[in-house]
Length: 58
Image (tube, rainbow, N blue to C red; front, side, top):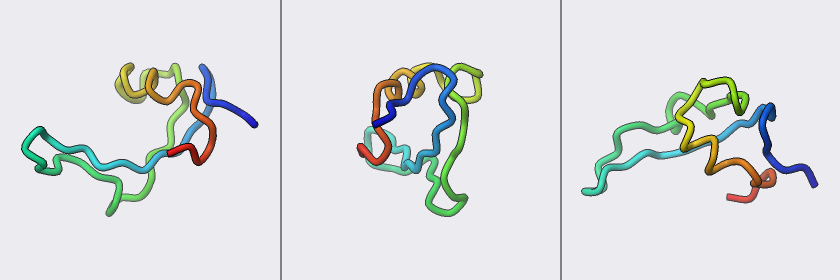
């Protein structure tokens, strides 16, 4: 099984919410987000959360 690491290209679907539950961003309408880890395409914290995950783990 492959795990996400620096240089991996990953595709995620997500719903971003505020503390009050309000949605501020979602891939529901725009489709999944694809990016390569380590290329500064997304927030570093998001990359760190994904590193080590296996495909389909969430």
